Length: 269
Ligand SMILES: Nc1ncnc2c1ncn2[C@@H]1O[C@H](COP(=O)(O)OP(=O)(O)O)[C@@H](O)[C@H]1O
Ligand SMILES: [Mg+2]
Image (cartoon, rainbow, N blue to C red; front, top):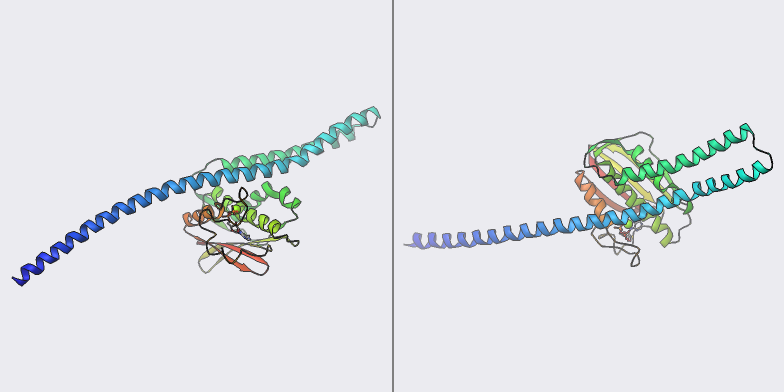
């Protein structure tokens, strides 16, 4: 008799548990769907934001060579009137013009590569990849007096989607640029180091921009966390960056050290 009651109770509990589990499963499924939708939305927003930042960079990169070409053509007219044009003159001018045009073509190519969606993961050199991000932002960073110092000599390889890695780097250095300006910093350095240690590959990006404000440092990788004015910040950049790091099987962390923030990407060998 007792055993029967006990078994019945057990069964009732079991049923209760089962239905609770089902309910939970349903809720988890719903949450997962929701977070997928959110992720897509954030991804789209991040792309648009990055696109805007890149367009600015390209416009900066093109301004100077366009000016130079325009000046050359003006000068050519006067110099011809004054009888200064020789074979040597023409050669030199043509070389100069080619150099300026090459600069514009390189920027444009980098820009196109950046946004051509390549789904594939591959081995690529970290140094080379960072250098090609620098091609895109060089002029803008120069104008902002920011010196980017790629300190490691020895190339290391990463296995990942290279475009995503470039986005991560661009997000981090653009944030540093914003921090230099927002905090009115005069000494503006970004140090980049990459190396292998204890079974991990590291890419460290350190700046001298004063560090991440303590009250938000815990949250900056969450979506829509920003300290910037409305219309200036979206709070999406670092959220996307940490997603990219996790997709590589790695982590992205931040620490305030020395004179600023240090972001560290860590991926198992
Ligand atoms: N290098 C940095 N120095 C200081 N603060 C930073 C740095 N990088 C990020 N932050 C802080 O993290 C916040 C979130 O960055 P992010 O996700 O890229 O969004 P957003 O740049 O649109 O604000 C920034 O608003 C800023 O407060
Ligand atoms: Mg940002």
